[in-house]
Length: 463
Image 1 (cartoon, rainbow, N blue to C red):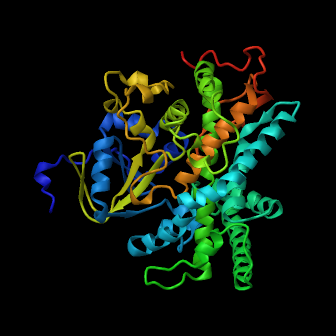
Image 2 (image 1 turned 60 degrees about the vertical axis):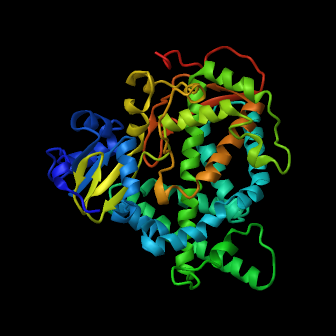
Image 3 (image 1 turned 135 degrees about the horizontal axis):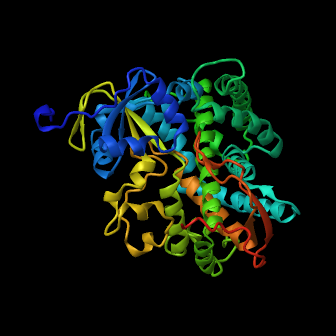
């Protein structure tokens, strides 16, 4: 149905013209979107490096965007688009996007997750033993990032430890450049990421060729993911070319890694800063079995068996979602929360601002939305629509794997370890590419049940 502009409000706009100052603020200020929402409303427009960009928050505006899917398409900043590659499904639209998403999505289906779960449990135990064996404070963030990468690289791609390590360093370099300024100055994060991308593509291409050779020889691979991708069909029903598959592999690594690593770091940081809620969760964890019974891993710690764990995960995801926002581009004029948005506008859905939007909470003020209170998800106090992994037809491909990893690691580590925050460290979050404690989350690890002093508590956490 054609839009009637006379029934819609005009689009509020900031005074930004070139967008240079706005872009710098966008990358540096974690409160960038929310401060402007308070000034201009739930739908407003600004300029980022010359690109007119519309920021939206709140359930109504987001629902309107999803309801007009045919009028929008996927969009990414130049740095992401270039580093993912032109063949990546993230840069495809329409039938091309759906065909590649269908192929890659097989790797995160329930049957695939069931196959991966024993290896994930083993990696959780391996990390727990490593931490228990340390006599000094350790930075958890790099260990959690390596854990998340090991899961996706070993269970899905079937890589051994040597191949994982060879990929990991370049992959971290590539990730750091994703949301950087897209200027290839020598030594810049973007330039280094472009170089790392070429090395990654060569390694992934060689990996694919080995998998194809093994399949042709009738040999069974350690993981079936590469078989599924290599046998995938494009939108015309033709097999995907090798270079197409390799770019999907690169996206696959990112989808199953970055958001998970961020979520794990923020989960443990939040619990360690809120000892009362950690103790509340621990009461439930003490009644659960680790490792989970064989064949029951997918449901062992689901919301029915572990409702407090589910509430904690939801609350962490609400306050520190691993994806701060996602983008669409309007192909034609659309209406968002009663506001007219013209064609050829980039729309950025602000997940963080939406999760803390006061209109989404029953009976409480906006101050409560800044507080870590997982009990809200059990008491029915929250009506918020949570989108920690994005939403719509482009929701993060690795969402199901990430949720499984988060629950397995939370139960496995917290049943085996008592973690204590080291004092005098910076617990503020670096935001790009995903939230993560700046000093790496330094902790001491003790066997579960160990009781020390309260040095690790943060007295100001609930102030």
